Length: 291
Image (tube, rainbow, N blue to C red; front, side):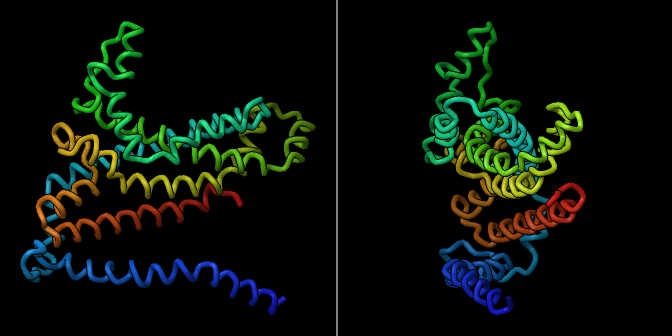
């Protein structure tokens, strides 16, 4: 068994070796260099000037940083909403309905579509004058708002678009997890007199917690890095900077104002935030994730 485990370990390392080489060659170097850059004032055109922790100190008194951080935190509301809708649809599709394969394709299409194309599509949908969203609301006598030019509606608009874009992948994950739940557990629950809600609460949900944990972690990380949708739909950050995310603000500092040192510091602050959030999630997982 020891020899078998060694061979399996060697095979596993061989599979991940290309990614390790890619990380060492193309990622680790820039990451280490960005630490130095974050301690400097550098506009690309002139030599970097060492300023120590000045960039990091400035960040915590930067009103635009806190505004973009708050916006990013609001976007995280899309994670639980998307998970809930995905689970409902996956359970419905798992009932053996006709055309399940077709539904899978339909729901998955947005996930494999170009994010740029999807953003432009939703920009048309949200158009105040001829957009489908306001046209649909008009059928019920509701006057639709200016979705992406109204401070109160711009963040919900981006959340809705994000849920639509990512729901297909989540449905596929949940559907695969549901199909792996042993039928014997449902049969045993039925013998004990359990109804549909009981089976869902005490059998389905606990067995879905590992995949739910994975989807929460990846959803939070992806949302904290939201950028393309905002950069294309609202290149100025939206009304009163209401749509700007941390990554969008970072991009502005780096490639609009050429403050590379400050942008590198922002990147490391965001990275630390992501690490802390992920670490907390892993620590709390012991309380609700059932292997």
